[in-house]
Length: 404
Image 1: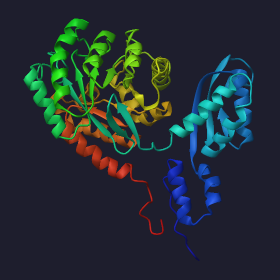
Image 2: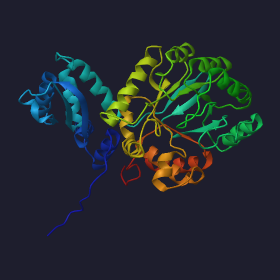
Image 3: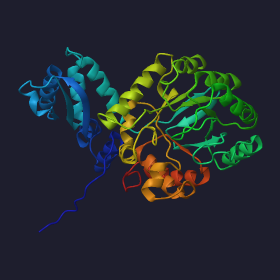
């Protein structure tokens, strides 16, 4: 009896699916038609009105997929329901096209679904203009180095409070290959003492101005205060990192818009109560994106950060880490900041100065999940870890097969 070699092929996106079919020798026209059939997706919509849910269910069934809804939808005992669209990429594309002509807001769903499907594909190489300096996104995972000029940061508070020490540390990170420097002048650790905008700028100004004269890479300023951001950008800073996602200071979005500066918008909240953890986080970030877009920013100028360690328990942080790839559906670059954080300390029972290995594990997981930037204290070790991970993950599966 003849036996056949049978194995499972990992296919995560259309690029890999097309490559696998090409290796078989399939006709190019057939490849274009079949590739989307190899990729199963689960797309969740929350709080969908019943009439819309009924239409989505019917249309998904008509294209060969399905849609999961609340059990009481059939009896109209609920006003809204979450919907899980279940199908291949090809079926979801058909659905998106079909509902574009439907009423009840389905046109909006169709457009959003098309954008989401595109966002799940590998990001292409492109250039982000940081007010005159350029960052290349999509080619490899970039490394942002943390420079705290505060006396009370959780990890290195006071270590670089002196100007000379701060500049020396920044230059050391540059030598180790950092792509972006992120300067913070107010601690954001739990139970930190807030400082005024005047005090924050007093700490920040001398280091920022000296750094801008000495380094040739983008310098980001970590602040949620519009006044501080405006002064930093006027002095020549290249981007802003807002741990409140433009939602703490009502003037912050206008400031970054006035300077057309790239902005990192991080999820944050008071307390750790959520209705749906990932749903609530993504809703917060979408609101932040809308604030930035209203001021003329778009695309790669808006960088999203899931906010590990902010407004989340250790268990919630671990769940977000396990679902990092979902943030790609927002359609913007993703930054991950886990360096030395309490999630690592509590999971491994380690003090702040013992968390390097745990940090490296999260950085590598970030690469696997498709993040664009990691924000770290230990630049050299993390750079080497992500370089190795990039060599594996960003290399397209199958390119070295015989006949490829």
